[in-house]
Image (cartoon, rainbow, N blue to C red; front, side):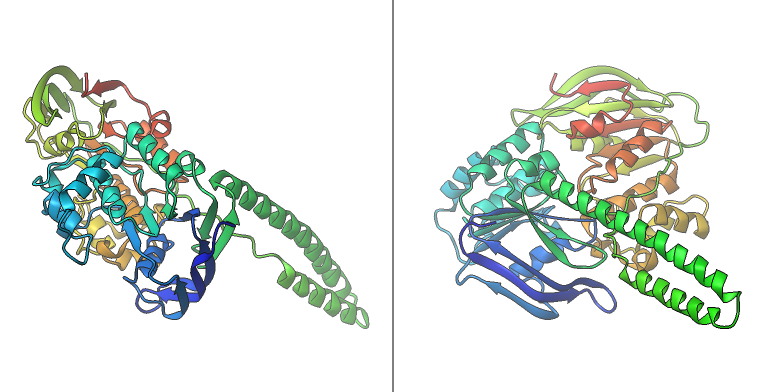
Amino acid sequence: MSKGEAILRFSDLSFEFGHNHPILDEVNFSLRRGTKVTLMGQNGAGKSTIFKLITGAFQPEDGEMHMGQKMSIATAPQVIPRDELELTVRAFFEKRFDEKVYDIDPRIDKILAVVNVHAPYDKIIREFSGGQQARLLLASALIQNPDLLLLDEPTNNLDKEGIEHLTKFLKEYKKTCMVISHDSKFLNAFTHGVLYLDVRTRKVEQYDGDYSDVVKEITARVEKERRKNAQFEKEIQAKKDKANFFGHKGGQMRVVAKRMREKAAEMEDAKVEVRQDDKEIRKFRINSQGDYIGDRLSISSFTIFKDQKEKTKKAKIVLKKNQHLLLTGPNGIGKSTLLEHIANNTAKGITIGDDIRIGYYRQDFSTLDFNDTVYESLESVMKDKDEQTLRSTASSFLIDGDLIYKKIETLSEGQKGLVSFARLVLQKPGLLILDEPTNHINFRHLPIIAEALSAYDGAMILVSHVPEFIAQIRIDEILDLNK
């Protein structure tokens, strides 16, 4: 990261949420003008918190944040704030400025062309698809022409074309950019360096190179530390064995034994504290709803959006037990809307079996009550309330300790995703509906989630724009909404 002057610097900066919930501990790093940097870390480590400290939404407990004078900052968060979903497109963009902008419409037109989305000025934000909302979020940051651009999981909900468009833009972007993402291919295309937030030490490690370079460097370092510790363990055990041997001899030998134990203790202290890499969730299984007999879902027709108009298409699809359907199509065609209607049993031309229990994973987590604690949210989907089962399931998804008593609204987007999967395990649905289940989720968890979905023996409908994830899941039928 050798380009330009340092425009941002954290100096021994610490931050915590409430009492006994530290996020950052004396963090130090700098960001140079014109660089493009990835911010990495485990779900819930505090990556989005760093963004909020930079924008001034949060204030540090200790230490300082130094920033260049008159430096403008714009951020595209992971999701559009719920209080902005009812705004029109024009009002949504106007809100990005402190003062009234009189030529806002041509500026909107110009920036929408950059992100490649059609958005009438008077259309309500909620009416756009998840992928279109992702593009609008990006456009709302770009329209400000900031000195520092902060992007939080910008590829979420984007189709292949959208990701390629964003990658090209970032490659050509002349100003400074910091990105939170789990998409390695996307990051490798434009990143100059990586800031890694360690959830255990609450420190930020700074690396040069792209995402792949950093993963290799961290892996090599961890392996070296483990080998060093293994050698220490071998020598420590030898000292302890000798101490036990001499200790039984009595007399002067006990002094020798004491020295051996002291030496072993010194070597214990000298062991390197090996970096605890991101934890993975435990393998899990989503059990289906009993022995439900008959069709779980049948599709004779469905509605899509094309050229800003509704169109109805014919189909002949029946899902029984242990059958998985993949829905495909570009952003804006109506995949999420169709899934929502199916989940609510309001989709014309689609019939759901009687008494089928539906497990619905929404990409915006709106099936969760944000005022519930995690415990209340998990318990609410259980037919048979059992605390041991609840806690064991929660622990499988790294939900333990005080986290289980926190409100959903305080969780990171990644943690909300893990809570949503834990709910599906406890719910035991007969029909599973998944809308972009990889969004916000740490890449380390995805093979485990893919294995669980592949093994699910109920009826399943999946929407995902991540080919690597889809390739790991058993799919029995594909419905391309664009054909």
